[in-house]
Length: 98
Image (cartoon, rainbow, N blue to C red; front, side):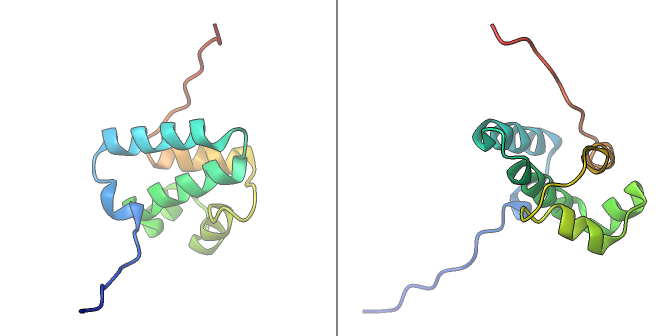
């Protein structure tokens, strides 16, 4: 019986359109259930898809600090989240809970 070869799935390889990016972030926010580090990780995946070096230039933050902030191991400051979202051409949308 031949061995099955597996590879690591990287969501960043599948985020190529603005619509895919927005859908992924929206789904991550819903799934996070208030876990800010989970949302930061999703932003990290999106930043990786765009190119972390470009996001670092656009935010004025170092690549290393972005990797740390968006790793999912910590909760970055809201100012960092806003800078990253702007660099990724994303905006926050609020709606009333019915």
